[in-house]
View 1 (cartoon, rainbow, N blue to C red):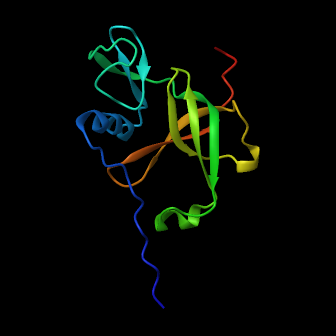
View 2 (cartoon, rainbow, N blue to C red):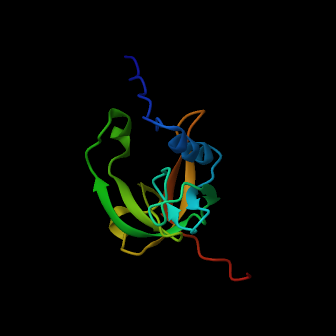
View 3 (cartoon, rainbow, N blue to C red):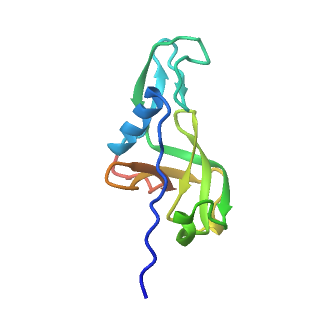
Length: 146
């Protein structure tokens, strides 16, 4: 009897240079969002123009990596064959300290332990040799020696 071949997980395929830059930062295990250099507004998903002031001037700024759970869903039926062994899994909307919201997997917590405003922090996992994907997990307690 032969083993079932492992189906590779789908990975992001950036459609433009700006989106590609976001994933390049993730591949270095850095969560960065665009920040307007004219008005300071953070934004995600990446785009050319600031929705606040219409400036086309921006930078990739390092995120704190911390946020709170805004909403979530528990997936019980795999949307892709590569995820069959991972159900149930959680996908949530995380409201980042910078004010942007991000849709992402949530790990290291049972679905029944999730709660609105749960403090979360980013982590990264290798999807393959070239791709690192962000995920969120419950935040560690802050070091009291700070």
